[in-house]
Image (cartoon, rainbow, N blue to C red; front, side, top):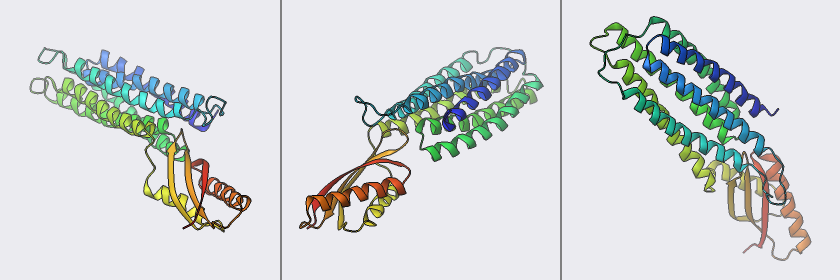
Amino acid sequence: MHIGQRVAAVGMVVSGALAVAKIFAGMTGHSTAVMADGFESGSDVFASGFVLLGLTLAAKPPDEDHPYGHGRIEILTGLLIGLGLTAGGALISYASLQHLGQPRTPPAAFVVWPLLASLVAKTGLATFKFRYGRKLQSVALTADAWNDAMDTGSAMAALVAVALTRSDPVRFLDADRYGGSLVGLIVVLVGVRVARDTAMQLMDTMPDNRHMKQIREAAYTVAGVRGVEKCFARKTGMRYHVDLHLEVDPEMTVRQSHEIAHKVQLRIVESLDWVADVLVHVEPAP
């Protein structure tokens, strides 16, 4: 199994265990905030499942109908995670605010333990996924990492809400419910961010200037290159495909210019592990 797939599988197991613990604790301990955080962890199981599916499908080799490979499935997975988080967060907020002002039993003290466990586990998972998301250039895995990072914020919000309600059940009657609503809002904000970032990549947004500079610098290391007129790049999964307009001596033969172009292609792919392939167009230098 690919390392990204293993990371997603671990996330599913951890999130599933935390979801069961928090939902059970919230129901038996009378805490809306803890239950909301538990349902949010439950959605993480599906998010990590989407990541696992996306990484598996994206690993399929290119074929006649998909010459650039199937990497965009992985980006689409990240977009679906963002949209799912946005919708799920809105539902959590709505459900938490439905019973404001109604009398209720204060939350039990034991509900804080699954929240503390969630803080530790999700911090570790987020760090782990961010690391491998950057290493593998995986949009879906990075989106899942943001999901886990957001969980630490939602767990903190739930902890504060429970603490306020237990400290003064009369004065802070609805603090626990407002805490559940805040958990939902955090989920919505992260979902919008993830959806925006992945949508930009589906629109063939160029990488940053530092990465584009690396492509040009790698091309200039090949003897015979006089200039790089145009340079474009688009992400088709975990890596980029580059289109390069290369300037060479106009008096060269077609064979000689082709050899230079081929060397440039190999140099860029070998020196930049985030580049999948390079299409070089040769032009006469002015």
